[in-house]
Image 1 (cartoon, rainbow, N blue to C red):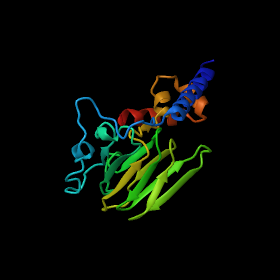
Image 2: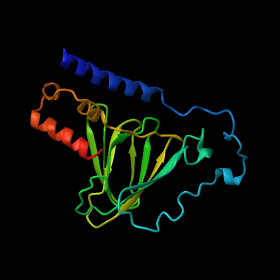
Image 3: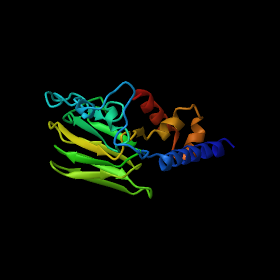
Length: 214
């Protein structure tokens, strides 16, 4: 009974995520732009300066600078947004987050990545087929809307950066943490072993790893 409950719970969560992804999109607007309250429209309204000085330093950890709806209100209704990703060199480190953008999705938009350095990328389609690529300077790579993907700087002593364009003012970022939801609920180890066809040792390692990286 408990095993069946876990299976149904996982199916429900995945179905809900898929349903929300199907409905999620930027609404069409009937005017040239959407003006927030207490704002006036002039050239400053369409100007964003959040990327000033972005090349002045070499990042010590993964750094993401965004120009999305929250940062740049003029994008409301325009179906575009932008981000710049800076990765430190992949040197020996105990912090897994420093040079890795963990698996995630953007439920509202595809992502078009332009490389100004070198990077390894990958995404998984709805048939669970994994596509990976090693990118170099001036390469473009597209992550389809809603699909799980990640980026990784595997190059020692070489920091890198990439520019991302999105087909939504609010592309959204959803970490792929379904397994964290399941392994972090206190469900008995024996049930998890049977549900995921693994062993107690693996389950304990996963739980310990999740605790370490919270």
